[in-house]
Image 1: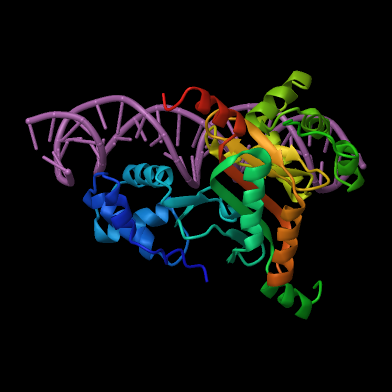
Image 2: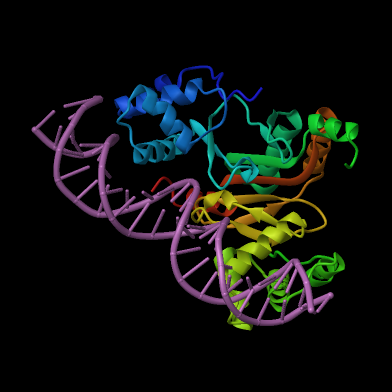
Length: 155
Length: 155
DNA sequence: CTGATTGCAAAGAATTTGCACTGCT
DNA sequence: AGCAGTGCAAATTCTTTGCAATCAG
């Protein structure tokens, strides 16, 4: 389940409602992001966008991502730098979730929990800190890899 | 309180106990990290280390940080990219904590909570995911900045 | 119309790498 | 003594910027 889609209303819709210029490039980028089935980095987003509009430039991708972050329509992830220092992006959903990155197989799991929501509330209450963006990532070993290692012990 | 120190035993001690070569460069870097009173990025670490040993090279800093991450003696932070894309480093403490980054004044607060520990346990139990490293960061507005804004309303 | 947005090309920031030399253990 | 670790310089990766041309509203 590493889908980054499934958001109530379309990104294009939410974007234009805010009175921002909806250029063809932005439309394409929003559509690609919305329909992505995995976490995209800037280069992948560019590649996919170019399948629809070959003239789109790298700079536009970065500028649009910056804008979408500010609008809080997309979140930026590191995924524990499992694959270099690039960033990944996903469209914001109803609720925040944690990303679990397996150092062994590279799989990314998502995890949401009331405890996570409670923790954020505790931060607001105890510190008076108003959270705009939150990112929690864990690196380690997923259950599937733990199983595999059990089968073939230590080698 | 943005101290990154206060760890039971010295880094140098923990490092050499693991049977790794303790070169003069590594010793200096470990000592600088240990006594740092704020979160250091690679460039600051290099600068401080050079005050003690002028010949230390950037590459050594990066290679040593990589090693210390693997050994789990230091953690890598982004601090919500408040100041560019560089990384920050802090020596690992008894317990994990969350970093709260104020977008307005740039201050970094730390926050630890049993709820956070509970959340990590929940991840282990429910997903069978063994966490090696965890990073939680929140960006928003700190209480001091909220106060300031109250005084001088909307501009 | 006209200012926001774009493509292009070049620059910039952070980090990594190949290789000959050095110095721990 | 031997090999892991280092400095140096160049390369790489990811992202940003200046500017003239374009296009959405």
